[in-house]
Image 1 (tube, rainbow, N blue to C red):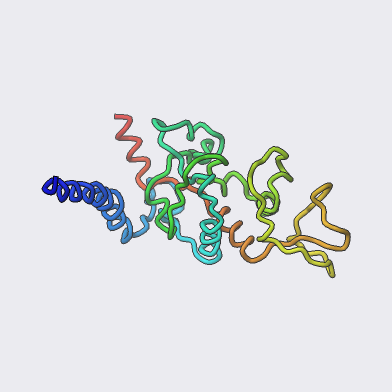
Image 2 (cartoon, rainbow, N blue to C red):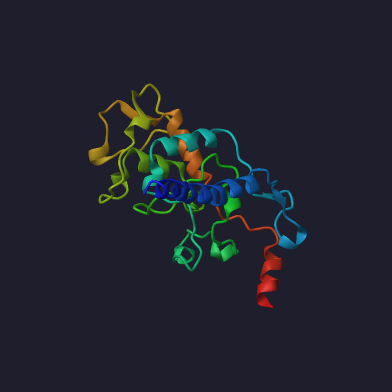
Length: 224
């Protein structure tokens, strides 16, 4: 029994270390230093663009807010390959099919994220391409303030802590439109905080629909 115990410990350690190396560390080292690929003329997109695109600024703060609120527990950010699900046929999830941009998610799509918010389960809709589906900032703010404004049966929690109720001196352009049972007392309005604006910036940046460099070549090879 004493001789078997060290073997058991080594086997247990190997069960954790081997996946850690080959599923996390190796892919990280392969992708962390990768440079964006500039599209060629054959890709038929503006050559000034590169894949993956780079974004900075408020989105980084929004990414932190998204993580701290635990949004990944109920929302995924991954358009699955066709063998794993029907994401490509769900309107807007895989991109804009009319423009030929519908595609599944690739590892490099997360290159500019500090955290890859793949998510745990789809209690809510997938957000990998939500920035392409919905571009109205007011829609996001109403959803975050109280999702039941748009859907009375929604089970999404309210994030009123990201908003501030204030007395109206001069009406704010970004005040949330609240009516009926959601309205606040007369003379007051609800406006987004900096965290709320950063979170909306982050959600608007979720557009995993950029064409892949060399796509035309891949299609030609597949056709053969």
